[in-house]
Length: 163
Image (tube, rainbow, N blue to C red):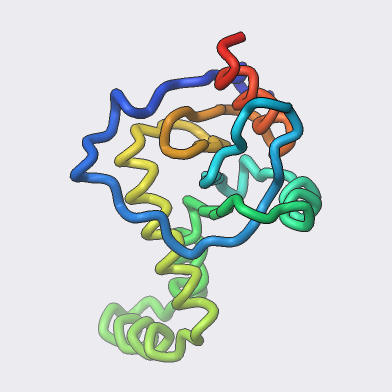
């Protein structure tokens, strides 16, 4: 169902001046291969129809000490927009008032989800990511089509070791 794993050097796609600073860090995995430094930052780009296995993220988060992990749900904005526009009245003026009221009623969690999705979309565009799931390691390479973070990390280690 998913395309083959592709490793792509991202330094050819990103200008240093255009990189958004790495934000909202959590922790992840230590390297399991001797002599290879683990990535400092792992960014996971996913969508509802291309989920990354939550158990792999949770398991690896529990093992981490020095790795930042950020998960971006690229379709987060569409999800919130869908909820905001659900069952709107047919009258455009009334629908506009209802929609504005719903927007004003967004709670902190929904607002944070919108913000996170916007950051994810921006980063995906900067990296040139064109399909999901995608996992970016230290802004240097991307692994496409893998839903298990441990498998993507192993691919990263292989790439880093030159094999």
